[in-house]
Image (cartoon, rainbow, N blue to C red; front, side):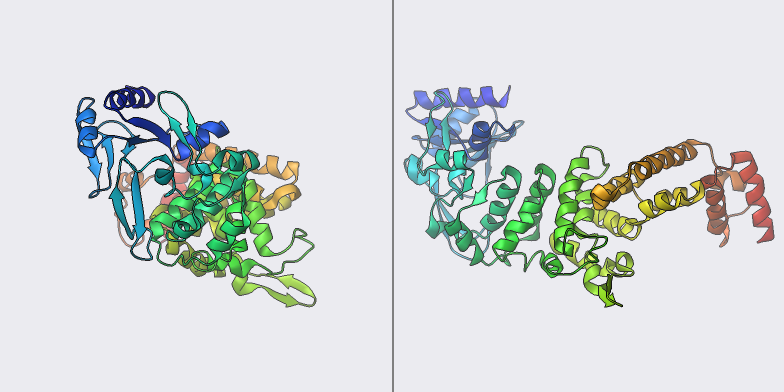
Length: 442
């Protein structure tokens, strides 16, 4: 059964028992913005939790979350079914709340716990009526993020990141008082998984992911989770190569250009993390020599800083491996293109990269308008050559063993030699003969 149809059938049964059901949260906001949102949250008013459970059992197996949260789902359906509740902070963390379920609290009080007015809108599942208790429709029209309740807003530190994330995704401005409230909130109690969740939305769902970070900068909230980015502010670059300004400005431009390639790259999240962190090494290496600004070796010397930066908010190993692999290579493609380097040279760089095509797209994001068409064409032609070489049959360890070699301490060295021949385009028969001759010399 479709989730919308399921919502309507539940709403009809609740109505028969004297209650009402509303779509709530982001689903209503996105509906009014004309943005697709497949996550359906409904809120059930006017019946007891026991009666709601009885109704849900008519449609399947109810699953409840937490103790006394009043939140259910149905097995096999990706839908949240909640009851109105009050939340009271009992600590400084995102989850440190005492929750009281009250299905008869009233629509306005139920919406009061929401973060922003645009997320406090409710839509009657059956009639389609929009209930706007806090001026969310006007703020939606004016593209403004405004907190619902100043007193309760500051109790949840995650709302600072959500403000920046919504500003980035929807290009909304953060209302001045709400921004001031965000400045005073301590983000150190957040768990890294919640920080990464908001970061991913900004990086992968926004056409202007830079707004996430510029909003945090304006709210003085880069300093804990993204402190290295704050160090990029005011860090000078050679204006000959970077007329756009400091390293922070450059990084933000690379981020925004990078999101245009998300539908093409193999690892979108890791790719955006590369865009975000590729120049952190300039914090350690930037110096002025004879009146010129240089950052020699930043792509290598910054790897430790990048590792620290990423480990602060993610435990995913693959994106970290990707970024640490690609960062040292990030300037190579256009250097090779400018020099019209040999196929062997471009093949070697592509082979070093975990995702060679992603490396080209990153280079385009990094280079921006300075990328010449002939250089871009050169890189993609060479990448096709590399792919064609990699699709050919090649010398494997089993071929060497079959030819009489025994795996020993020099076997990996011999395989490396065979791989170099593969990158040079030598066909398998010739490569096998050359590799065996090389092994004999060893």
